[in-house]
Image (cartoon, rainbow, N blue to C red; front, side, top):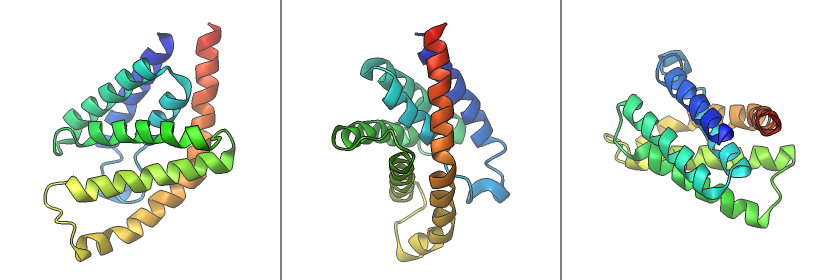
Length: 163
């Protein structure tokens, strides 16, 4: 239970960070969604029912704070949660390289869903072409920093279990 509360508090802090500071034009296209490593970590460390509650709650909070189409982030995080479970059935995702690959896939998937279902984006060639450069930087940043975040979350999880 302590772990679930810690993930919810971390998720709420990242929602505030993402919608305020990281929402500025300078950071908007370069920084990937930092809640993706949280969702991956929740899937790797919590039981399914508690993890599902945490992910849906974080997605709900992000939907409320982002001002976008309601349910978009909640659905995205739910599918990332399910996708990590499916990937972990076939591949061991405990090494750094596999964690990087999983996070890159999750960031690509999130951007695909946001492009497809966001209001105002028709999914046209111009919208996709406009996203290539920011997506490249987001994927690169996710591949480099994602395993660090996941290892940090794993250490915090171990400490919470020991208490």
